[in-house]
Image 1 (cartoon, rainbow, N blue to C red):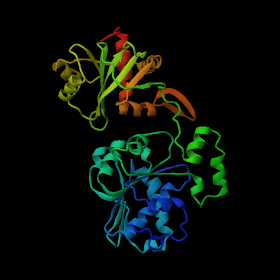
Image 2: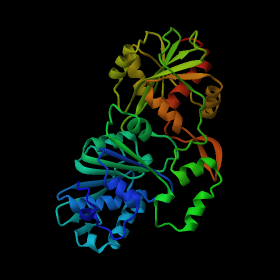
Image 3: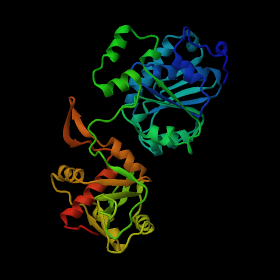
Length: 396
């Protein structure tokens, strides 16, 4: 792509630094972490239109989790960009509102798609990918879509908390070797009024100010579990129980093993992830248990699917259901919060869920009800340890 501004100046009076920073980026993945009104989406959409005009026969895909979010954000902004630029209008052949596709006279196109799961993200290849508000989608969706992207991927989000972009992309130097991070806030948007800037600068909550006024990564409030530690190795002893929280099509089957009061560690429980993917058949689950050292007779606590439990029992696995009467979620959370817990460093999905598993917030106030998401391992660990305690099992 040319670095000559005279060749790529499509928009009159374009002085915003985010536009140029993204357009001239050479990295495979360009991450835009920004506060409110920093102009992330507007700048990236302008970049995509510029690329579409400059590069004949390019396929450019803009994704979010739902069509509703696309219409409220990227599509709405794209229409305003087109409406304000006569030069751009002369390059566009048509816009198909049903398929949500801009067709250009040079054969390029910009399409807007919603991917709710990784299977939907597996279809089609493209030159450029733009993941709008990345915190709305799962990492597996990003992975599948980015894997099918030939030239460059743009990502943006408000950094209300650390999530998969930080752990799986920015800090994953082995898998993503070419990543550029652009942090922006309102100072980078030359078109804001002073009133808008003052509104952001006057935010009193320190964490919210960091996120929205400076584009810095915030800390989730109301996380259910805090203070869990990481440990290098699973302390393999006889006192071990196991768990499976079932996932079928979209949600993962989360499985793990739990060491109970392992000597010399100072922890009440040490947990270790053994699986985290949808639709794992019971024969494979049995082999996963064996590979991790399962001993015949050790209890495997399972979510209440009688068929799956019976299939495991037929494979000589001591599978039993979670004890989940009314009120067991709150009592189980209280039980687990009273314990000192560690998880192994290889348990990436346990670590990720810990950051995101929150209490529901209503009108600014936290409730005692946890959000029913980011909780597959969290449910498995809570239900297995609490059920084992109620059964009187100090050791497996």
